[in-house]
Length: 512
Image (cartoon, rainbow, N blue to C red):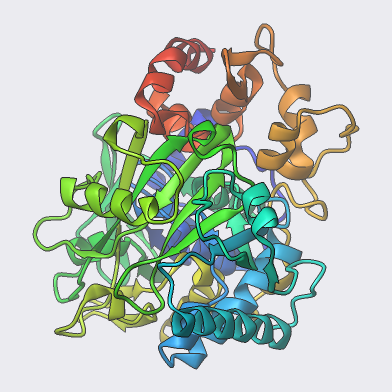
């Protein structure tokens, strides 16, 4: 098995890895796609003792993996629709992330359903029953109540304390449950990719793949235009909604999930995710979730998205209106488009199963071998990325007769988790809370390794990201462009006005 390496991803490592591949360095598994699924596959494969290369034509988490609700769902919704298998797997995977893989990136999120006059007694009973089923799911998955507390009914005053902007008239208390929340989905992808690199995997961004077969791929360095062929014992297509570009026989049915971004002060700086039933629908909700950088993400939609797949999907006016209409049913204020400070949309890589609303299409995944021998994984959801990766690598080992050990990722701490060998030895005391929330046990390293001027200074007034974090994105997290730093490593770019204020700092620290 490859030995433990530095966790640092940067331009110099990328150049060295590209050169080694062009010179014929062997690879057992070549993964196409740098989202959560591809990164998970790379980590699973390398920890089994296989030599691994991951290529991504843009940046890590460029596609769907950065456009999620930042939730590690326990699978309650799937239980309600009778899909017990995916519900239980989701609960198990949530527990693994929260207690073993990434306790620094996933925390318990209070999920609050206010009991307002518009919510009928049968619907209240249904939600309460669902929360109780979620408690049972958590227990059967082996997740402790100290990690995820049980659900409860709470008073009207407690509802107001948790979500100050809630409608007060007729408020009859609330139902409170807990789910897993990521500090950020793109940070999870980066942590998984860096942990794979720590074990010896080659992680190559801005490297496109074409002419893929079961044993070879043509790679092109997007920065230089240089192309070369690479042979691999297994080629795995993990490109999500773009999977059909690698294997045209695959049939996907993308659905668009849109979120709106607000200043948390607009909602009275809530500490719970306001969970609002969608009128006329069962088991579907809109969430107003407190997030990093003093923001609220309001989502999400589930709309058919036929046609060509855009690199960066855009919300529609209809989706924006829908989200505002639903959230306003539960607020004592009225939000309108003038309150929105940002928005984003992502495409779910759903398997095409025919007719029906996309909200009802299974979130399960499938592993498919094409006639050319490329192994593709389609469908699935972020919470189950580790399980999906295990499934894909198991199949690749079987089909290609690879000499590999068993899956190691169930108990593997990612970079930033306290038990990871790359965690900081410097003292954590006195570090900014925001830094620890984003980097976990690695937080002290961010400041200790900084060489820039004024490393602890914010990149802009009112934004709790330090100059050292921008530098660390370049020296350790594989950021090669301003967009990588601002839009994916820190997420400042979700708000255009904030983005403009930090561009010059990103350019300065990228230049070194």
